[in-house]
Image (cartoon, rainbow, N blue to C red; front, top):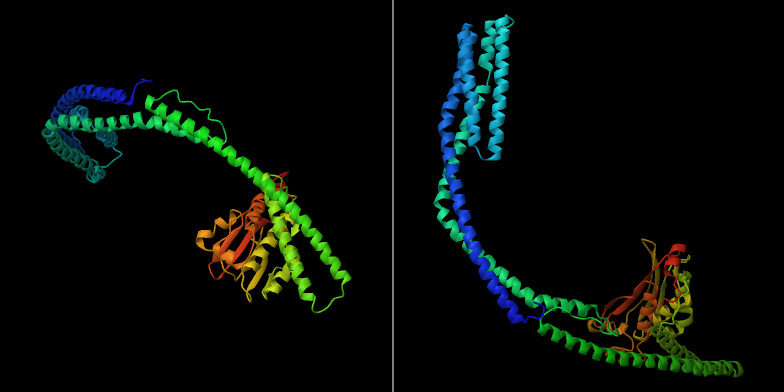
Length: 500
């Protein structure tokens, strides 16, 4: 059926289903006829049980009565008559047992037989002790009166009689409904056949498509389409060929985009490098100017403005350069012991002038003692600088920027930078981490390339952690990340030749 069309396969399924339906209808009728025969046989057995039980209970009462007569009169005739009744009782008990069909009833009936045998053996032992004179007449009569075994047996036999009546009623109803069984069987198979046809149709149509989906899912962008579909109807194979053609077109477009991405990274790295060289010249010239020119109150603000802008441009250029390295896979981590508190204090010393110019309050919430964590000190310093610079840029005058470091449970250290700035809109929460993206309000508030957060997140991902954001638009933001507390094991886990 490999080359059959979908229409041919569906026709074959319907024809097969109709044939099987006819065969199963015949089998259902024959099976029902046999079931009716079994019902009739069971009905007869229940009638026999009901007819035998009264005489069986009577035999049991007479056995008990003959035993009492012997214990009272000591006449051996009663023992002979009792023994004859016991033999009849045992035979009747066995015959009734063959008429019981329910397993639990047969087990209970056989248990009653064993209990009667034990009762009979106990009474025979009593009779022997009476004949031997070890039991007085009064004691024998008392034991006969106190014996409740016979009453228990009679009650349990009555229970079997009630069960038989219930079973007779059930069989009567079953016989009345026998005429409906064939119809129900045929109807049930009709429904089952309908479901089976629907399942077969689904398999004929959906199974090849599922196979196509599995093969398409294993293909990766940028890799040649080497998958083949050997089975399936012609319609699906045609679809497979179309998808192969589409994959080739996507690969061509992907390769083109990949080349453009490489070109962009090379361009960004080149521009950043040249930008840093120019900034180094400006910084040197500014330093020489400050050394050679006499310091005056009028010139101090201009020197401060030049230094702040040189730092800002240097940070932007460094971010662009490092982002290019990350995208090119050339950014290496050097995992060492880093004092988180000292890292924040160092960033504050270098960059506090940016906050001072905007009249911002800066707070440091970190312990006075060391707070060691595992990481690359230069990379983490860049992350903190980016977060602090962003906080300063997007916080209005008079606001507050807070740098924090604290030890968490589970051997983790958290570093955070929070502000009382403009916050981030819900629609921009993920976009600001993508790189080269800035929210509209951010563009109005400050200048920049929009790469600082993207670079910070990529550096932290190389450390095995993530940059988390808590923000409320118009009220501020809190950026935080967590690093393992420094141990030799934590450093070994993070230390890789090239994380990106």
